[in-house]
Length: 409
Image 1 (cartoon, helix red, strand yellow):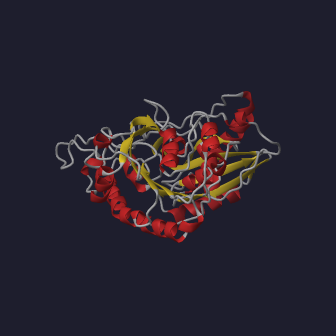
Image 2 (image 1 turned 90 degrees about the vertical axis):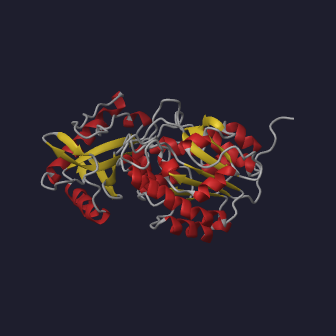
Image 3 (image 1 turned 30 degrees about the vertical axis):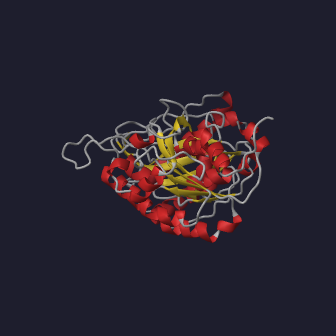
């Protein structure tokens, strides 16, 4: 579809904003003791601004990868930006590394890592209790000093947020994409042993051996550092060759994200993504300050996903309400098209990402509207957009912004 879109592009002065609440979608809470019983997080939240916007917008539910497939954050966002996540299967490692400002070369394999707690060879906390970022920065610096290389392969560390960090393994020769075909060691649940690294292609054998030695040496360095006494690795990836956002859509994009992985994804497709720290009001103020210089704005709101993964239903409700309070400041900028959605669902009752379709608002002058009473999963199921693939969202945004010519005579 990108090749078709590219031939239809036309420039104008329109502005498109994607306000992405990570892990937005949810499921009803079944706890009979809770006042939220039977409601999803969106239904339980007090969201007068989102509800009003939904009433006058095109609403629907989008599917990030395919029905029944649970997406990671990388595939979820690629779909939002119109890149088919099945065609462009990108490991999370390079997204984390780029987001942390690390250079990734053709000789590199990037890995996204978690500090974790392990007891008797079993993972008891995959995130080591979400330790303070500054504390873990010092731990990562210690690993860099004590494990600078393995078997002639240089290791480059990038400290991230809380329990996260990235490692680049820099080999002496250029690598093919198959070199990163290695499973994660993260078992994705507490109470399980870390998974062994198994190469899924002969070209990945050497990379897997170096990565396993890194895990072993890191465990030796961290053995007395409870709760962060182990390292889980995820998202092995090399540098992909993909069209930029400007090439695909004729847009100059600005990403305003506090977490490195999302900046990394934006940088991967050629958006400007400066390092940013601050709350959502600060993100919107930054967008306002740069309004004249860009056509497309990606504002990423993280904590809805974090509370969902922690199983904190009320906490996720509170973050949705925080995002709702920020909405008038976005509307005050008068974007031609405003999309409010998530990259995937993270129901608090599941404590994980899920395969459920994600609610979306598309606010623009040329929509039907009037089909929903508010913003929720059930309300969006009634909307004019129906249930559709996430990769269709960018063409819809471009069309509503007047940036696509007619197809054919």
